[in-house]
Length: 68
Image 1 (tube, rainbow, N blue to C red):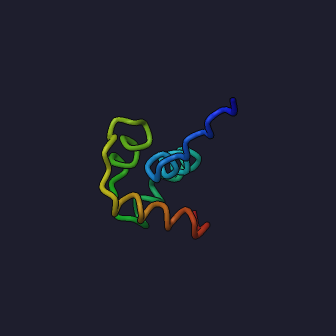
Image 2: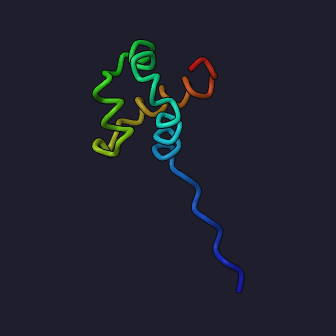
């Protein structure tokens, strides 16, 4: 029997992974998005596990643009 395909990561997981790759740039990301450094840090570390969709979308768009 074939193995089940791996589940695709959620937007939250994708954004968290992209944010962790930019850990030294939280101040810059905060300035661009208007999200506090504290919020970015808590989300990246998993302390904030239920972010609003609009925050995820804004971060995803920023990371997709390649500007940070």
